[in-house]
Image (cartoon, rainbow, N blue to C red):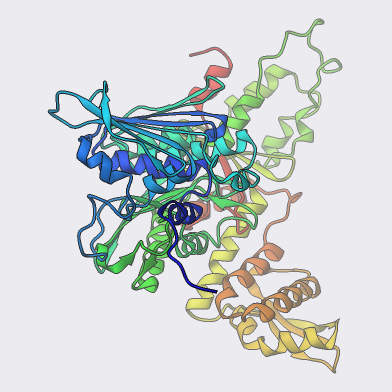
Length: 596
């Protein structure tokens, strides 16, 4: 079989298979061209999910007739000269327009700045049309019709129109975040529009346009630098998480990327604070010298490769963890707002209020955290006015002394699990089990990095029968457990003797704890060892040793828990990533009652 030169059209169609995978790929390339041309306004119109029509209009610098002829030829570009190590534009390959023209009906109309008239060129299925004059404003209009009509087999792999339109919307959102000073308008065949007005230099305002106002209220600013690499952006507090990773955005030198290294570092940064199966919300922007990052990994330019990946990973993890430690110790506002939406004004009762007709139970059924004297005032026979006077007679000196704390002063315990505290401008509801679990975890974790956790010896060792393999794994890590205050020994071929437990945990189900640790070790050992997972062991032990739901707490115990929370980093969420408290502002409560 003899070797022969492929035709230019076939070469472009092969290239289109890599560069233009779907309508969203074409939209991405055209928007990048508009941004590289200096556009401050970009309008995108679609029909049929971008398969029937994709039109991109910009007010950039525009092109003259000679530039138009070169623009549709392969490997012709104004963005690259000789050096692939100094790429400072979004596009640089010179493949997008000829690739699109080889598989679709492509028309480009443009007028350069200062030109008296514009010009137009077309490429239909690889066939070049001559340049002709056109009436067009300064800038460029690129119209793509019947995408993949020249390669109909590719159409069989397209998704539904709605799915393709959604993919284009995602491209526009990513570009909008990267370029807050540019106005974007996306319109579809269903007459829906997606508009992102320019926010100038206010990047957070643009992010709020894309991700919603809730993100702005729950975001922590990231700004860190290491060895010439700078990381900026915003990361959501751990309790502001999602069920998928669709609200994670990453940019390298302004380029939207889907990079495994960045996503891995983001997961690691939130590893201790978000439950499995949940994802943080974050917008991260890396700025590095162009010669230390390779953007020429794939024709789609969505993958990058760093010269020093360890530096980038360390920068991301360190910067996010530092920011979370400084400002992420709070519950997300969505918890409180969701609670406020659950409250609705109720219609007035039809009959006069009596204890018998009220849907509410007498207050002695809601166990208070106050002392016996205060509890007595809430007897079942107390009338509403008596209850009010009981609250009014609470010591004012105690209120004044305690509400200055961020988490306020404990006022009651509801359902033997939720602490209600009064703050200066509202109230806080605390999940006592989740909060104490986090406090114990932090204390255990300190023992991993300092002196061992104090242990308490069991009067009679607890013998736990289990398979030999589990026993082997537990004993191989006995030294690690000892640092956490858990002393174990082998007791025959199929049993473990527990001789010590962490003193801070008090009375715990030691056998249940050891069995759970054995299950976790069975999974971890096959996946690469325990060394990096001691924190998770501490979290497991903390869960077994924390204050349980259903335990009545005295007033001083509740306040002591609140004070420890204020002094403990990360106490805004438990070890599983759930919020430990919800804060409700007095202004929101007053709005519920029409007082403001």
